[in-house]
Length: 398
Image (cartoon, rainbow, N blue to C red; front, side, top):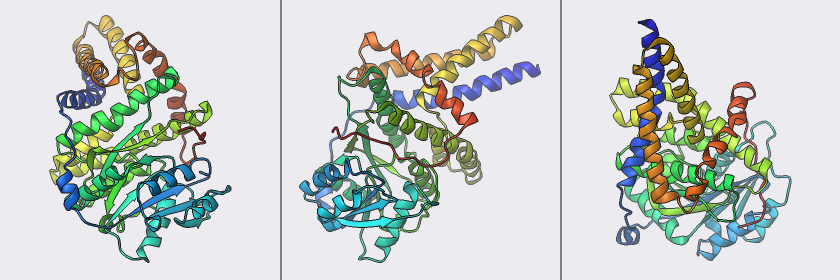
């Protein structure tokens, strides 16, 4: 009896993120793309600043800033925080007449500290209505900027743009699989979360905040996924982030294998650490406050990275199959198997609708190899967890 309870609890624990993801994918499969409301965008009048944290970004900062200036963004509305730079990032930015702040602190390193430095500077300047945060390697067009501005003003809440990695057929198979996983995480799932009225997870770039909100939240911390933590903090203060599918930000995966591995390790270790540290707290607060939106946020954040989720579900199903064969107790096995099959079906349908530009039918089998190639990342989370922010080295390709 005790064994049956343990097995069912194990199956249920693994099934929850499978059902959360599967339901989100199903909702988005039924979703119809909405056009941007140009009338609302035209009516919204307000000022904005674009804050760009940059650490040794001399290879990309000129392209990013030039693109913004070509979109008619005023130079004095762009603030670059050259954080602990040992290259000429600051000098390049100054040549383009944007506002440049230099920060040096060997102990307090990371994007959160750089953002806090820029926000502190803005507190002493003329007030702005909206603050847009953009990574130094990202591109955004003028339409998307004004969509973020208008929606932020009308909703009075943080707004997350659709943050995508560019997809090219000449990319390696591994990069295209990663691109599809990124699409699921940053587009497919947030669409469903938005439709359910649940706070969306912030994804780091293309984020717009009402100034009274962002100026009162502490962001000077060393969390290596500061965006996810920032979204949680905003939600707890009563300003749940909203997703804007029509505003788009583009970036590129690093071309260098070691750089890509370092970037992915930071993201996934940070996500797993946030699950461990924050999800139990969010669930507790949701129950105490009877706030089901907060519970929804906890469940959404509690979904591990896609590759790890599939790995855990596959391994767990095999384990329960062996135990069921030995004990003749099949209930837990069928619970997890049904959950895994539902999730797999939704993922395949999502690929059919949105992912065929990333992967052909013949290439689908390579997903399994890709998933198990990431075992090292998850093992290092247990034995050598990355806890500090490390800059991703990039090339100059756009």
